[in-house]
Each structure stands twice: as C-alpha cells, then as structure tokens.
Image 1 (cartoon, helix red, strand yellow):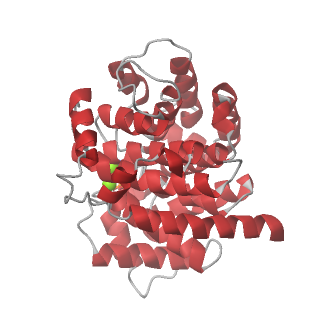
Image 2: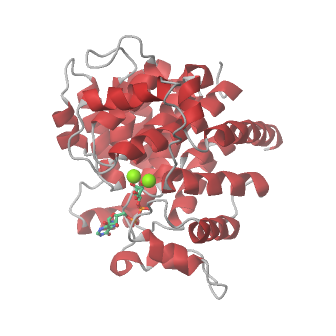
Length: 349
Ligand code: R7I
Ligand code: MG
Ligand code: MG
C-alpha cells in the first residue's frame, strides 16, 4: 500500500505482537542456533500440531494499554494511560515484567498519587530506568499521530510513566520514529532512512538531561546517535556475523542495547540472506533473524516486527502465524481504529 495505508498499520501492530509471542521462546537465551529458530517458526505452520497458542508478554500487554488509551481519549492522556498500566499489571502480573518496573506499576495504582511521573523518577536511586520497557510499547504512538513532532513528544511522555532516564525514554522516541518513517515508505531507501533517524536523534539527544545521563552511565555524548552510526557501518558491510551484531549493538534489556539492534534487524533483512530460507519474505526474515540474536528476543522481535510490519504490510504476515499468537487478531482490529484516528487528526490539525 501507499504511505500510511491501512495495510501498513495492520502490519505494524500485528507483527509487533507476533514478535513478542514467538520471541518469548528464546528470551534470555545466550546462544540461539538458527536451526532452533527455524524449527520453532515452522511449528507455527504445522496445523496438525497447532492447538498450542503462544501467549504474549508485558511488551504486548503494555502496548495494548497504550492503544486503548490513545483510542479512548482520542489522543495522549497520561492519567488514563498510567491507570491502564496499573490495572493491567494488577489483573495479569505474570506476563514477565522487568523486575524494577513492577514497583512503578504498584505505585501507579495508588489512589493518593497526584504526579503520575513520580514513581518512575524514584527508580534506581532517582536516576530512573534505562530498560527497554518504554520502547517496547512505543509503536502505537506512530500509528496515532501523523505529525512527527507529536510522535516524538508523546512517545517520550508515554515512556516516562515508567522510564525517566533519558536512555530509556529516548529509546522509545527512536522506536516510534522508526515506525513513523517506515509507515511513510521510507524503508524503500534504506540509506536515507538511517540518515534521517540519525538527524532526528541528533536533535532529540541534544539537551542537558541526555548529556548528564550519558556522562553518569559512561556512554557517548549522544548514545543513540552513536549506536545508529554503528548500524550504518554494519549495513554497509557485505557480510556480518551474528556475533558481531551482538558485540557492536547488543541484545540486552537496556533500550540502548536493543532499539538500534531491532532497527538493524529490519535493515539487514530487506534483502534475502544466506542464513535464512529462500521461501521467506522480508517480514519472516526479520522475525527469524531477531530471534537468532538471542538475549531479549521477545522485545527485539516485537520492535523489529513493528517497523518491518509497517514496511511490508499485513499481506506479508503468514496467516498461520497470526492464528498461533494471542492478541494478534485484536491487534488487527485495533490497527483499523488507529488508522481512522490518524487520518482524522491529519485532517483536523
Ligand atoms: O524496562 P522494563 O520495563 O523491562 C522490559 C523488559 C523487556 O525485555 C520485557 O520483555 C521484559 O522481559 O522486561 O523494566 P525495568 O525493570 O525498568 O528494567 C529492566 C531491567 O533493566 C531492570 O530490572 C534492571 O536489571 C535493568 N536496569 C537497570 N539496572 C541498573 N541501573 C534498568 N535501569 C537500570 C539502572 O538505572
Ligand atoms: Mg516481555
Ligand atoms: Mg523482553
């Protein structure tokens, strides 16, 4: 479809859920042989085995809260979103939440709370979390707001409800921007895509809060920019091993070690790759490759899935994969509603 077509919205939201559900199998594994990945994925295609449904984790649980809040409030409402996070956690605490963020979610359910951003600020001795929990649920912001300034602003504030460290919330901004660009068809020109992201993040990271956090955590002055330059270097190389990707970009639970990695997975899988089956299309390649990196596989596949799904559209997603994943059909319906909200806002202003 063309820029911001319904197919792209559906692809983004559904593939994010798939990445989370199929990625859960390998979360935390240090080494994941491609053979195991392909075996896992082909078991989804086997209808005779197919009564097992793969459950979604916190990544999708929180993204669903973001979606429902944006739709119900027809825009960003931090009180409403915070309430939904807290409620979701209290109803289903067993979705695999990060060990730190649980404290925030418990505090957010207190009726005495008057600043919904305060619990996040109290994390990790007042520095806030740099985990990827803000980024893993950032895609819906790109599907609700056509103006990139809104995408950045609201993705940041939505992430800050749990992640007040700039290395956490700037990861959410980067992920939302990547989905935004992909939705416009920007992945047709991969070099320009990565340059645009670098340019955007130069501005996003050009402030005192970022410099301060980066200094304390001993990172480059603009940590995400530096990682995106590494992504660009890896893109330009004809052969890259999984080990190199992991050592250059990471596969961990920090936003800095997973959002640029997810972006790389999408870029690397735009073309057929030797290590991946020929019958796979780009979307399937992206998911499979993300899982083969090991580490935080559900989250990296979820984020890569959202970006890739916005590029390839819903038609690229195997029907049988959708059937196996909890919440995938819901995501498809939500995507349609977000598509309407997005196009309403682009008319209204
Ligand atoms: O970021 P968060 O919501 O976790 C998301 C991850 C995804 O992989 C999900 O799929 C799920 O598995 O969890 O949760 P946080 O608890 O805020 O951060 C995750 C972890 O990152 C923490 O439990 C810490 O181990 C680490 N971390 C930090 N460690 C030291 N100092 C995050 N921030 C800090 C920090 O400032
Ligand atoms: Mg998870
Ligand atoms: Mg994870």
